[in-house]
Structures are given as C-alpha cells and as structure tokens.
Length: 102
Image 1 (cartoon, rainbow, N blue to C red):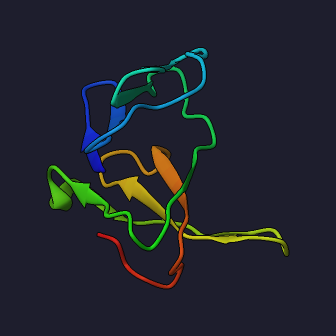
Image 2 (image 1 turned 180 degrees about the horizontal axis):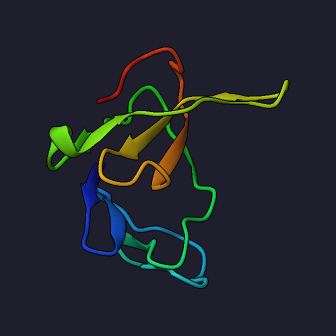
Image 3 (image 1 turned 120 degrees about the vertical axis):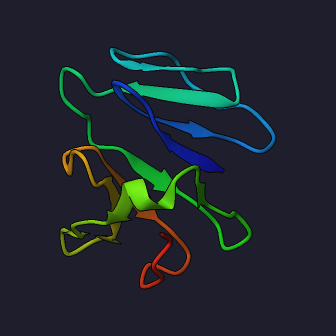
C-alpha cells in the first residue's frame, strides 16, 4: 500500500485489489484501488488494519512522521501523520504496533 499526501488531504493506494464499502462524505474511492481523503473540512478518525504480510510505503517519506498513539485500554494504535498538518492522521491497527513504519 502506498500512502500519499495530496493537495487537500491524502490517499491510500492498494498494490492489488480494491477498497470495499461506500463513499462517505469526504472519503471516496470505494470499489477502486485508490481511496482519497479530502481533509479540507476536517479529517475523520481513520483506522487502517494491516497484517504482517502487508507492506506500507510513502511516496515522500519526508512528508510523514509517526504521530500520537490512541490507547483506550482496549486498543493500542500508533499513527502516522503529515508533517505539514498533524491533524491529517492515520491510526494503524498493525501486527507489530511498536514498529516505526515511516
């Protein structure tokens, strides 16, 4: 999966397969391999579940950094966020939550 920062937010691009679900609000791309988030009116809470066999890459690593952790006593979710706008954040429900993916 490739994570890209865009003009109005960011996108998640699958290497193969398609996203399932429905387009909602500022999130579009259901049924395609590219899911786009328009963050110009705020960023929804995004939780991305991955397996150890899934790889995550960034089009420009320098635009991303590890962010805040969501720890609600049930889940421990690290996040990645854009350097330009830390509110643009993706929480990772990953097999190895202690790993720096950036």
